Image (cartoon, rainbow, N blue to C red):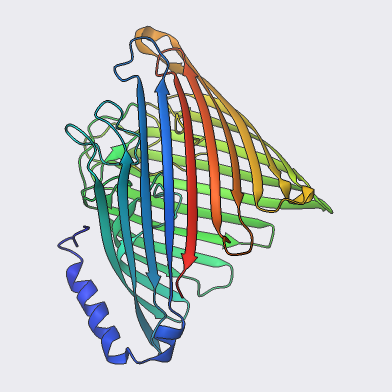
Length: 413
């Protein structure tokens, strides 16, 4: 179970005690909602390079995600409480096959189950909301991973304000990190290629502002600081250009500058751009990404990185000085009378980074996704997805990977 950190119990207690005297408020109950999601996840990860210490990782697991969100009490300040319960069950694993990220890694074998339980106190004034407790923030500087059985969660506080139309402000602090395959709540670590000298930290401060200039254009600035590890500034721009019926062009441009803090050696500038042409049910995309500096792109351990070439197996194509490009194609089968069925394939190639012995590093990856979600009837919200990926390099791992995911979300109320 997730245990509250020493900094947060008082705030949680205050939020809960303030909510109870007005628990009879109709809005508290009427606006409440709860759902349970079931995920059945199989993953096979084969190492194809000569001399691999582990030939494959192969596991199968069942996940349960219970999500409750209350409404807010009435009055100038509304109070509420959220709850998140996570349970993962091992269906198949083995001492020589663990490490997929679906289950915790044991000394001998993966445990039979693992779980998390988190609570969040919340308060709302006008269009500003404060959350304190278990968080799953979705910001460029911190993007918790939800690509396995259970989502990654954090402990901390986040204030979001939308008092001005089109403007969203975020500020907060994270203190503990619960990885996607762990019951523990620990200090945060930095992840990134070539990064040294980082320290475990219980303080990640963040702030951000995004503004929607029109229905087509939005810009954002975000700041993140993992104490004793790195400081990061991210600027992004997104634009949607309607051309004519069924035709549009999307632009997504991102810039990030990361510098060291404490004794770390973080030094990275990341520039990326992705452009997509939408033609009815078809989408054709291209992306380019360039790393500069002594290290790769830093982010909190376990999180996704805010890069246009962050993908399935090799992660982010973000070695020091690496440049990479991507081509992508998506298709929505609704036009053929099959709503809910989608297809995606992409290819990414990276080079211009250094391997051992001074050789130029090169790597490529190919991904394919096929997914279907039932749109109506008794099995509405039941989904199945097959993900296939191939990764090759001239000095790292060579990997073939398959993921088969069945999911079903049941609204409780």
